Image (cartoon, rainbow, N blue to C red; front, side):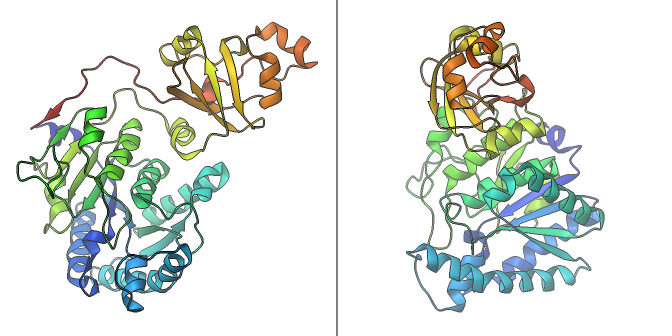
Length: 386
């Protein structure tokens, strides 16, 4: 019942598939790709829009070059991606073509998403592709990315893509059946968790660690990605990628995999972008009064509430706001740089001009540019139902 309620109004879906699903002993598993593409095509017939985030370029390149085991250096990974990406897209183009569908390739890096103008340009492109009935196939631009080729890269990419296209659902297809209460690879007593109402510390701790020779992520990265997606108010499903017609089963409301319920207090698209796409250039420690104003009342951060300033940031840079215990409570766009913040922290807004010789803003961070990143309510915590 819960699944049908959560998924009943879904129209736009981000489907992410990992290398562990797509690859077999002889490289890219063409049978699995045909099965997966057929499943996506069936969703399209039912009226769903699908954005497809696919790993597999590096694995495909490794196989083409006859390399076994994990690649050890960044140039090796980038070169393998360069060899494999075109091959992977050819396979997808042929597979979707059998169903009368076109695909459009989008390769992204973190810098494409952190820049607001480029972020909006990507959104416009993706929306146009969907309007044309094209299936966007998105991957990280591994041939040029440096920091992005790391643990859980495409899980996080899918979470960010969900915000870009304002998806109604994210489905992460993995080699596991979903999230278990213990690591199923090491415990025969492990039980599948069909429903997660809130991602607590306990939930994060039970997520199995460890990647594979063909992937960069594990269950931990998928749960962290789920945490970002539900903060946007979007449900998230981790499901077995090799199960035939798994996408159709999910959209029929069947209990497949693990469903993460969306947060009741979710962020809008811009604040989500601030919270999860931008990397902080500094930290502002705030007192208890400012914390309450930000978290509970949705107010701006005033200079009077700042007790400590760290980092080297300029006006317009993202900064984290932490409480007296060092817990990050929000992230926002700073109205003043480091040296200015040091001069005005603890002061009333009416004293800013006297301290600086000018006053561009009353607030250190305006509430429109401030995204709260901690729970704002007292919902029951720690439930792992099932």
